[in-house]
Image 1 (tube, helix red, strand yellow):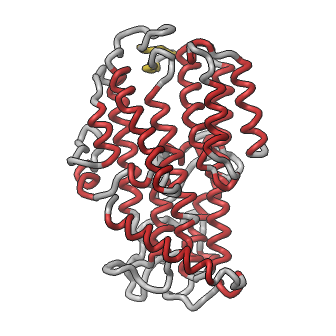
Image 2 (cartoon, rainbow, N blue to C red):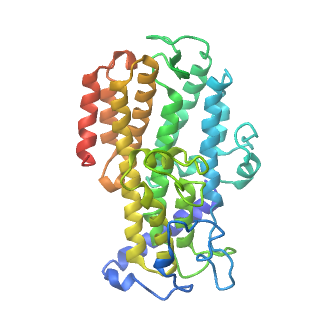
Image 3 (cartoon, helix red, strand yellow):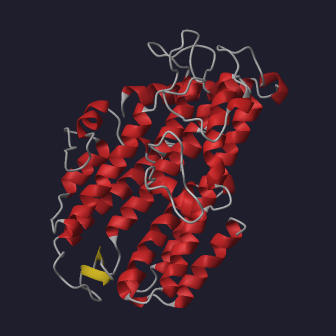
Length: 400
């Protein structure tokens, strides 16, 4: 664990103890305390206001930015790099190395190269990693179990990558085709690359943003600057939450219900927010802006309300994605499409355990996954009855 995250955790623990002593304070007494900075007029927060260092609202008395998105963006780029390396198995007909995947996950030994990401040198030098923020809201033993589970997929991915030129069949790892797309699956027909990606969308992005930064992080200090920095601890966790969701200064800029903008693409959790939360994807950026302004204003009621809105909408997106990919299995016309849909669905269902706003736990996810994996033949033995049994509890839990 790097020093900054360790100190962050210690600060959260101290604050949690303090909170238990002062819990009897009324919410109104915690709102609109004297602010470190000049207050921001919420009316100035339009849809075209960027969440970037060019924003002239989030500045100090000397006109210097108080935003720092570097850590969150570098972690996001780490996820993109790991995903790119997994894709080499199909794209480059390349046998993968589990140790490289493990190093990319933990950012150890300068693992990133130009082949993984254009900003590889900055990621290597950043000191941030995906591993130590995976399942970061959980107790240490539980968090380590999740991290070890993610790492257990790396040798599986390496093994299946050696079958890039074998046609998959029941009991045989290899590739399946859907039109021009090609997918690598193991002997049970499971696409390990998708399990890794979707599990990390939940265990890293959703949990870190929702349950760590925008829940526990909201109790951090907002009255003094972090040593050597131009922001408070509370300002920074809000910035890191945004930077962990997107690299764009305006989240989903230019997107419509029909298409995302080609000039401002989104990947991972941000992409699925657009695809599977049509009623509210366009409100996420405004919520991040207003919440950040509320932090500046020391308006606890407002930033907690915006945080709850963001958490709720991100969780609904993943719940809908889980349902959507299970339905795609039912409507797909070939094994390639069905296997791809199942793997995405399984990864998203695993990720639902981090949907704390809807009180989901690991058992809920595991029970559904166990049902979907109940056939000895895995994907090859899956039936519509398996899928229907998985759909109902998700719909009920998330009121969908």
